[in-house]
Image (cartoon, rainbow, N blue to C red; front, side, top):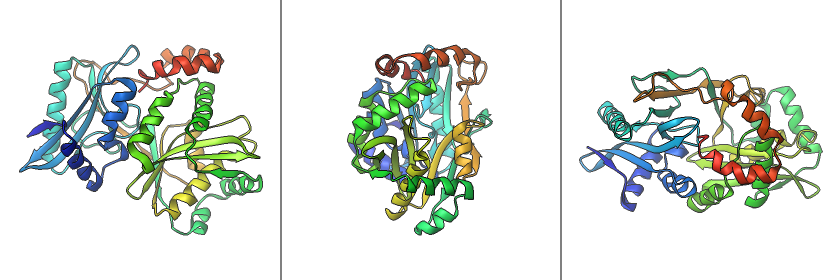
Length: 340
């Protein structure tokens, strides 16, 4: 039987299932229904399979309508991982069929499953994005040795630059650096209320790290904790960050901090093939694994291209980089609702 999540008791059972499923991610948790819904007013459809009163599969879906990307159901928008979790083939197929039926009812262009590995008999796009994950040690020396020599030198340079570590959770400082960094990349940023909602909903499973030089913030990253994993997700730096090797210093401090906290998997997240972030993560000794996004083309003739490589976005990116920060901070959150 396929049901729709609607009660706190069901949400608790949902999260219990997610916590024990080997393919689960932080973005499968039920709390995102509230975070995304409250921040963007995006309708959620959290479907779960049930047998003999027990959950045997979950599928978090959001109905997103965008001028750029059309009318879609996505698992999960704004984040890199999602899709179906199931205990058996019957539950997986039932959830896929229920999503397709919902998509036809809502007249969407497609249903997008953000799987790490393909699990459905559907078209797969695996040549655009990769993810980077590897195990880390409880021993800091072992983790440092695992970083290739040239990048290890950058970590040590950051240490010599006297950067100060701040885990106080200062959302305002984080957001100021993040927003400017996104503007400089030509990408609309997400609203500050989105990050505040994350902190309220997930508490200590979110964490902000800020690196300072002589008290002045130079780089920052917001991370998620899930089981024995850490996922540094949103970050940025000031103009001074590069000369201070602040990014290498920041991720090293985060890795050491997480290892001491009991984390054993460092998930560097998703990158587009060939980009600067892709090369940075490879230089840290992480090996890329292709993402396997899958599409049920309900009303669309082809799989969409939503990457910045799409010529449709080239002019918009150039213009955005030139706008004042006050303008991008005001308009960006509205635009970002459609850039999921």
